[in-house]
Image 1 (cartoon, rainbow over the protein chains, first blue to last red):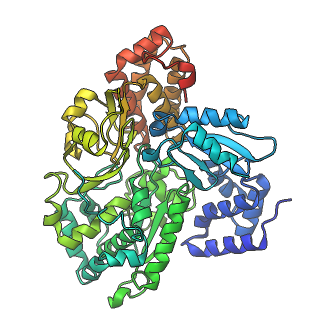
Image 2 (cartoon, helix red, strand yellow; image 1 turned 180 degrees about the vertical axis):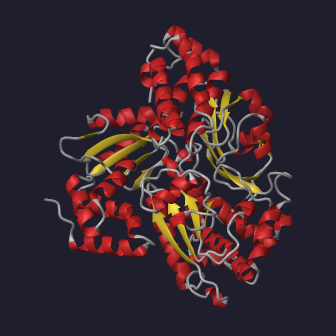
Image 3 (spheres, each protein chain N blue to C red; image 1 turned 45 degrees about the horizontal axis):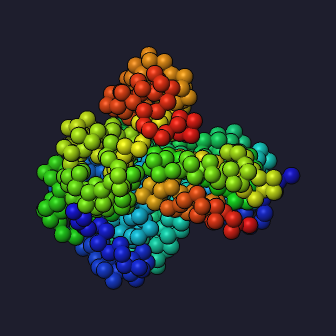
Length: 157
Length: 429
């Protein structure tokens, strides 16, 4: 059974006081909880948040489902998101994404067997003048080639 | 040519710190502005002709003027949910000059009578959120934020809020919904946010660049600002130049600058052996321009509107002759379908159909009548929804299909792209 750590609970309580209403803390709290649950949000996570925040589960659930940064299934330790929107697309973003999948032997929205990587194609991340790019967990990597991207990924544990 | 009113000191390594910002005269304009009456600031901004830099281009001073003339608490929200494909200028502004944005917000807060502001940043910009949070802390410690700012008796609190990934939150009422802890769905207007916005209180939502531009406007006055740009599009603007170009980057140029010169001089022109095919001048929602139209276009609101497109967010996406327009429209419609919030039927269903029809054409299964079907569906999506996303999806379809119809017809007839070397199987999103 998923449980929020004491420090996560404390962080969520402080977010609930930070904004004008406690509902504004739903998004920040989902991030805190997602981090505690290895990068994704399960129903148990939603239940734990609902209980702690005293906000109905359904309310938190609909927010969770609306935003793309909340993962609805397990992701790798290194969650690789390759932009395939227009500025990246005209600079090889889709070929980059395909190359990464091929080299990591994984499909889109899938995770490698060892749990080290998962790969997604995503919409514009605001890196248009440094295309193509990928985001791995919180970090942006820009001006990539298929080779440079793989060199970066091979260096990640 | 590059004209740096906002970006003059961006190359200074520590400009993002309070020390670095103040070394270049940072927060001096705030000191001056705190001695002015709110109406004087509003009048100066109105006189400057500053127009919203997020995409809609609405006059900022006029927007501020919609607030009720009473003492009701009101909010000032900075829209930093930069998500329009092709756009990354707000990111650079926040990375390099977070204090310029903060200074602009305190001045604007004073002007509109707000004591509380938020900077709503798209969640993927994790590093930007950290930079802003550090800058806000520095500004509090130095007395530029909080109670009784610099002994003026004025209060302004500011916090940073990170989003969680949704294009639609860039629409101002969607942003308000999200900040309220809800799905980021836009709200029906009226009431406009200035009357009933965040938590049903009067609210002003301005783009990062708009709020930052208040600083140079107040520094040297509206008349000095108007020396740049055109009569109806005064001042400078940051443009994100991306796509098939030698030197992509974010450049600040005066409005009214020739698009061809921008591509040649700032962008370094086309890559070796390539020819210009098209430009999307204002982010993915702006109707595409052909190479012939590009030659006539200037980077201002009127010139681009005159060509049936728009300045939008200032994202100039250059497309060369190696690209297939059917393929690129497929990329865009996949995006709009993904990002439609689902509230309004014409948008929810329309973006889905556009995506499906293009997908089928790109798979080589298109029928000739699908081309007109694209136009018909797009036409039915215009002006029928709560927010502009539906139009934003329809406009590229109408412009791509009308201006590059031969490529669409070829694709349907032959089952593959007219552009040599592009096999459809690899191309689709």
